[in-house]
Image (cartoon, rainbow, N blue to C red; front, side):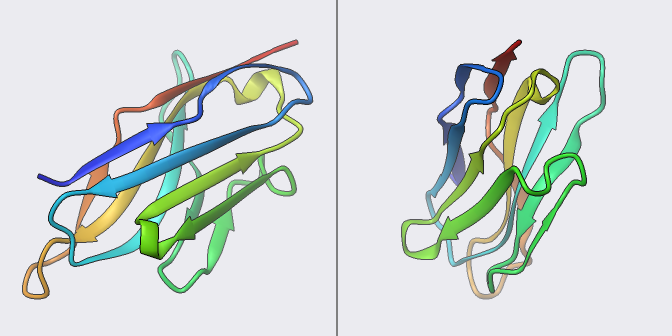
Length: 121
């Protein structure tokens, strides 16, 4: 019954900004790493950014200095602030979260449905 719901995608001009959100719901004991991936047409899904439960982050080289990942543990929500967007950032963006549903179960990955980000030149 765990669900991840993304929002915030859309169409923006090059140089613009968007903020993506990913909210987890359902029976959740804890959320470990949250991450954002993207998949452009004809390309493989790639990691954009990730953040651990302690707040450590890592980014793909292509987005360093432009994107910022963050999370609000109380709201079970992760965010991806995207600035200085480029046409090559156009893709479907997916949220992934490593979730433990009870204290006795192993954490597993859950994915959101994806949100389209289109950057026009």
